[in-house]
Structures are given as C-alpha cells and as structure tokens.
Image 1 (cartoon, one colour):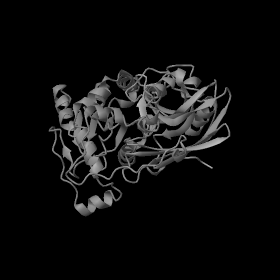
Image 2 (image 1 turned 180 degrees about the vertical axis):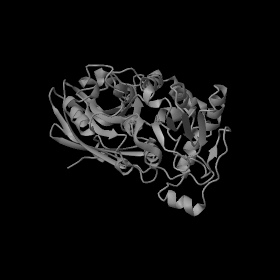
Image 3 (image 1 turned 30 degrees about the vertical axis):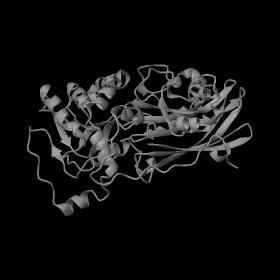
Image 4 (image 1 turned 90 degrees about the horizontal axis):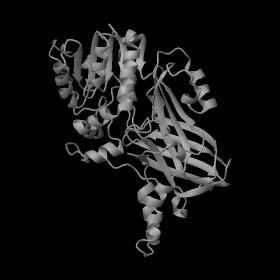
Amino acid sequence: MFLNDNNNTNGYNHHQPPSPPPPGMLQTHSHHDRARRGTRRSRASASTSNSIVRVSDTEQQPPPPPQDQQQQQQPNRSPCTDYDMAYFHSYAHLGIHQEMIKDRVRTDTYREAIMRHQDSIAGKVVVDVGCGTGILSIFCAQAGAKRVYAVDASDIALQANEVVKANNLSDVIIVLHGRVEDVEIDEEVDVIISEWMGYMLLYESMLGSVITARDRWLKPGGLIFPSSATLYMAPVTHTDRYSDSVDFWRNVYGIDMSAMLSLAKQCAFEEPSVETITGENVLTWPHVVKYLDSYNVTISELESVTSKFKFNSMMRAPLHGFAFWFDVEFNVPTVAPTSVIESHQVNGSLRKRRTNPSETLVLSTAPEDPPTHWQQTLVYFYDPIELEQDQVIEGLVTLTQSKENARFMNIHLEYTSGNRSYVKESVMR
C-alpha cells in the first residue's frame, strides 16, 4: 500500500498544470524565473504562426508548395499551441541566450566537438536546430562547413542573422526563421547539430525537433551532435537544504512556529528543484533512467519513460530525495547502442569506464563535474528517511509528457525502504 501526503508522508496530491492562456494573452514571467525554472527551451519548436522567413538575403526564398502538397509532405506536423507562443516570446529575451553562452562547460564542449570532428564537417551541409544567437552555426562555418542552415522559431533569429553578417558569413550561413517542422531545405544534409537538452534532460527539450530534422533531411550515414544522451538518478542527502527550508520554523526568534512546518514542506518540496549539489550529497552509484541514441530514438519513445531502480546506501544518512542529471556524447558511432547500455548498467556511469579521455567527448552535468547552467534536478521528499549503511532503496520512476502541455513533465516515483512504501508525484513546469 502506497502512502500519500494526507498521511504526512513523502508524497503529495497531484496538481494538474494550469490551463493555457487564451489566444493573444501570454503568461509573463521575470527573466530570473525563466532562467531558474527551465523555460530556456522553445527555439526550434515554437512559433506564433505557420509562416517561415528566410532571413538570409544572399539568395531568393523559393515559393512555398501548394497547400495540398504541404499537407501531403507533412501530414503529422504538430500545431503551434498557446504554450508554444508564450515560450517563443520568452526566447526573444537576450538574457537567456547570454546565460547559455556564458556556460563555458556547455559552449566550449560544443566548440571542441565541432573542431575535433572537423573532417566530418568541412565541405558539408549542416543544420543547426534551434540556433539561438547562431554561435554553433558560426563554429561550424569556422570548421569549414560548405553551408549551414540555422533554424530558429524565436525572433532571436533576426539578431542571429545580423551576427552572421557582422562576421562576413552570409555566404555560408542561411538563417531560417520558423519551426523546424515548417521550414523547407531543398537538399539533404550531412550534419545535424543542436543544443536541445532541457533540465533533467527531457524537460521542455527540443529533441523532438532534432528527430524531425533527422527524418526530413539527414543523409544515410550522416552525423548528429550530440550522438547520444543518458539520464541518471541517485538518492541524495541534503541536510542543509532541509534545515534552511523546514527546521527554521521550529524556533523563530525563540517563538515556536512549528505550525508552519506542513506549509513550509509543501512550498519548498512540492515541485522539482533545479539546484547545484556535490558528489558528497550522493548516497549511491547512479542508476541509468534512460539512454537515448540520437540516430534511432523516436518521438513516441519520449512520451513516457519508465525505469526500475535498486540502490544500496553507501553510508548512514538521512535520505532527502532523488537527484537527476545527464551526460551527452559527441562521437561518430562505432559501437552498437546495446553495448553502451550494458556498460552503463554495469558501471553506473559513463565516465567511470573511460580510461582514455580522448576516446569520446562528453558534456556532463553530474554533481562531481564542473557546474553547468543545467545544474541538477532534485525531487525532495516531505520527510527524510533515515538510512543505515547498505540499506536498500528500490522502486520505479516514470516520466511522462503532460497532456495539457508537452513541455511539462509529470514525475511519478514509487519507492520502498525500511519496509515502508511511498509514492511521490510531481510536475516540472
């Protein structure tokens, strides 16, 4: 029998995401809220209309095909929702792009991946899915790409085109302002590059747009960067965070305010938290929730992900929740994905099995690695579980796209420890 928060345990009542705003009325958030809550993902899969504009003025945009032909070519084109429109407008804010570019781990790793595989890019046709300010497109041009299609649905594409002009790259980079589902590219491409990862890897991610670009344009044997991604989870202890959020109310200037504890727990731990932890907070080796091969993953595969887990605590400590993070790889595939998955499961972490640092380039958001703007995503319990060393924590996690807004993620956790079972449901929005 699973307990819920009505019995003052670690679960809580499921909350439905809010209804979308009516047409023409967009939900507004501060930049700080957008940056902290993860709404940095709309670039290639959101648009206020179905119009597509070729921003580059180096060549004439061909006339669109007849409407009936468009429908035949793209029968499964996803509609643009009010949520898409809201995220689209948020991405015209330069501060979000500045935050991402200033993430040196992120940006330097992408540049290194492009230059390390320069032989696969030089003289080739590239698509940058969700180009933002165009920095990855420029890296590809610097690596000798023959042509780069920089696709973005946000108005930031207009500024990206000005950046392209300022760097005298208009003869190489063509900026397309529109959804990747809608724009037309009249040739097959050799390389797809995209920084599509959201918090917790899949939250508000653009991977569906990358898959669409792959299925529409990528040549057989073409290259996709990143080539794969892995989502991890592990039990964590975080006494300072719990104390700051909850225990504070037990004694406030000598006043007993413990009546606030229930509300304090709800306010602090109801929704997933994006924050930075260290390896010292992690109680076990990580578990692989999902491995994604960029060349074979399907859009339907992303709608729901379920994984069973079993951990053995390495120490005696309070268990405060679970942390999630991810790695992405930049590699020309040479190993079957099944072999990689087996390695993950045996060793717990991709990084642990590599003895040669040059073997594969990895962008990691793990607690023990240099911090990134993705940080880690934590799902906290309302009440900690006191663990003994070697105590088992097992259960399953299910991540599903919200039916109200596919950019939201429903997180369902079932876990058992110390002969007690719990359920935690949360919505990342």
